[in-house]
Length: 367
Image (cartoon, rainbow, N blue to C red; front, side, top):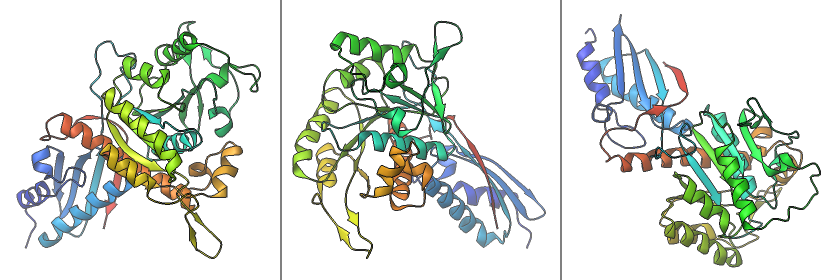
């Protein structure tokens, strides 16, 4: 029996979006369907660059068309990253999402998490910027192996440096001596942050990741006041001594009305050469923070020597060893983050139609 175009369209309208779990027809994300000689070409919009989301939508399309006898499908997946609700006075009108990586505790690996998440999002094809907001202890130049000073084309806007396709800015790029101490009072720190936000030519970005310093002081407060943040990622390690400070960062986000997107438990465990798992810092810390914050636990990153080694060499593990346990963990967290951002925008807009935006496109052939 010949395949009917109307039947194909109806079957695809009923396919559920893997993020919002609503039919494509109701969401308005089935953008086009063509049928030629029994072959189907469909165009679908999704709101996250997540690999899992793309694979799931492909599998669901195949399953929906199989009863109709369709054995060849060309699927054009358009990834449309939704945008935050910025005001007319927002200094970053072309940045779709601003995400703060923070923790009330020092030494939990915020910079490692921020850098690897930025790289993982970039590897998904999105436009990414990374701002090192730790004025007193900038680590981005070392972790990304980049030197040099920013320039300006017009004498007004600063051009960020770039590495691995990510736009970068750090106070470390402005220092003549990387070992030089920055001895500033609060107003100078506030001024530097404001310049990094307003005077840097970030251009169009899908995600701007901000690596914040420890504590709950001026930096988070300044950023929350100057920008409409998409939300924050809270980083912790499992042990109780870390949790007591991390709880405070959660409380600060709640007071500033900054949505908590999720929690990352860094240095979660160590797996030895025999494959035995050792929880050196205890267990359950990330889950406790997630429960306190009312947010999902995005993932647990293991302790691994390659994270330190590659970070010291200026090529973070996601870029240098993506198939390693830590690389896979960061990639999974980036997928979950992108999905969570889409869900938050979906809820903000009423939970009816999928949010529109701009982003990378993918073409997939299903057989």
